[in-house]
Length: 428
Image (cartoon, rainbow, N blue to C red; front, side, top):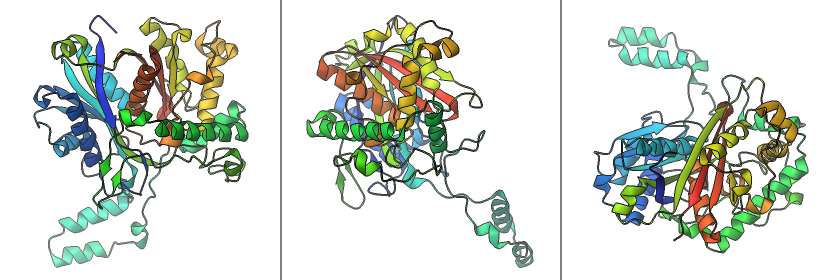
């Protein structure tokens, strides 16, 4: 990525919790502000020298879409820091990190904060345009006659809200439906999906028990006086037998269930980035380096919606100057077990590589001991705008604990998008 390397100095995330539960009264600005404060506190950096903030979110609140700015105000950090909110669906935090890294590499800045937040609990129901126009006209009406005239045009159906949902405008399908269709395309069985989900939960539970997540997960106090210090969706007692009893959610004959998909989640995550030279000047001790960033988009009318990362992986490896076998860890976003298992098939398939990448060799073979070793989005949760920063922190801390070097981050996203990073750990 150029001569001046971009380093990750430190980072933090909130616990990831099931939507509409313990974080239900914490808006995205509050969750975001919490991690911003904590990251600066952990680093010991004078916040006045932070030059820019990028934050991701997928479902911003209707009253203010520049969540980065609102989170900054909530954090108490200097209001002079410029803020930008980005949306690349589930890769939003990763894109925020890439954006700040790009500014550092280009010499525009030396120090920046990047991450993301999602509060599904804060997502509100919408009303039709007809209802919106009616309300606008009623508010604008000044005389009693005008208001009565407006009221005469009222229709009861205007009060019917549009249920919040996550659908592709192009296909009209939800993410879950797309995941189910992906399972069919790659012939991924229901049993293998359930087994993958169980493994994710068990690995996440074991990671919490051994204290791994204490390296970067912070406690959060709620307005109700509860202190949340652990992810709430992990099920240590789950099993394939239990998951097999769940009904398919999206198609009657489908294989995606609530048990083998990532849950709707609230949470935030953030990292502090610097140029390597600035980190040395400030005597900081970085935890890692961003070696490369690559993105891809696919035609969602022809390709599975969530296959995008496989097209980006070869680009990221080439930019980093490494081979697949050089990787010590692979951290893959788990939107659905079906999506992960399909992606792994594509990575290992010589036929797929030939047809889609015009390559004579498969991307590589998966070593299960290197894949999502501390659990992933199915067990930990998936606050859309924050997951990319969660994965980055998880990768670097695990590399350091193993005294290993290189990790690959893979994130699928709505719209047929994929984003991949290669990172390098720095020993403590």
